[in-house]
Length: 464
Image 1 (cartoon, one colour):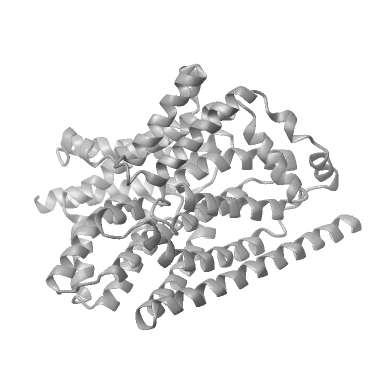
Image 2 (spheres, one colour):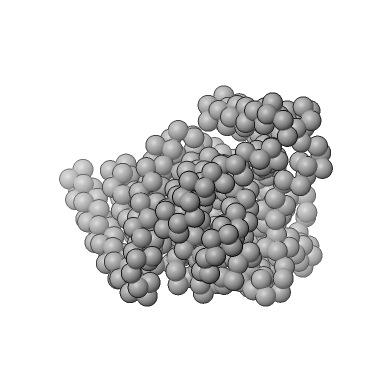
């Protein structure tokens, strides 16, 4: 590649992202225009462009969107919304905390994109009933999805890629990453509760209306619900064992969608109306734009520079990879970045005769997954949530998300850095146990804070 072609790819990338950030033009149009410029100029051939599209992500999104679209017709999301609201007493802040916890747990057990597809409709239903601003709920859930997805092999695409390229399995990710996730999550939630504590208020009348509702009446089609639940259970099982059966997660999702369409005899046209096509095509354009950087060697050059800067020393290399991955994953899709870093880390271990480079894999996983919280375009789950919200008339702006999420992302990387330092310098087993204990204590603090906000809200309502 000539220098002019490389500079052109960088220019297209920067201009595309500047337009996305400015929100003057719809982000899907901006991404498609950037992709078109790269192909028209000859920087990427059509075959190259197709090569850089991650069809595993696209297939996963479409498959799960179809399943969710059909399942939504049963009324189950409204059922869950009312049940969640009633369990939280209808108090908005407690509802937000409850949904965030569900999001984090489900993101670890499933994957964060699927979880967002399930939780966002529930959230929008709850906030409409309580007549409160849904944006604080959605931002909190987006961040919870990326944090929770960090904990396991199947929770986030970067972890899936790392697991597939190494000897690391599901339990390795769970044992090494879940402890710090259990610390980062409550700290992040505590700060978000503090930020939105005074903003989230509703009336006692609306709370009582929700408490008096019968959620069972929301189930519109019990027969379809049974079929959808059966397919969903099979899909979840498929996600859990997809490595054992050697099937990509996209194949599992698309097979689940096809099965549900077949057994439910649901109108395909209506099912596909539930697919967030602007989000899908935004991904396609974005993959191609980032592919221009990968094809011209820009991403590889940056990653290689990071490894050369550390001179092969394990501890500084891990710290550099952590921060580079976090910052890059905030603005560049983490999938091509991680794909570039994996062979470079392997080569570094070979050249340096380092037998165990697990420390570098954990650094990459934490940086890439947590870094997705930096901006609204930093991770697949972010974009899916934003797309679904926008379709419902709720707009999450780039700057609005950035002002809240980016500082919290930086804080989470600092916490991850100290965890990795302790993991490297001391006994990893001891560090994991201590970290888990800290996480449990922080979780208890959240419960106390939540109760305090509840009592303050009650006093405010009485005085009013």
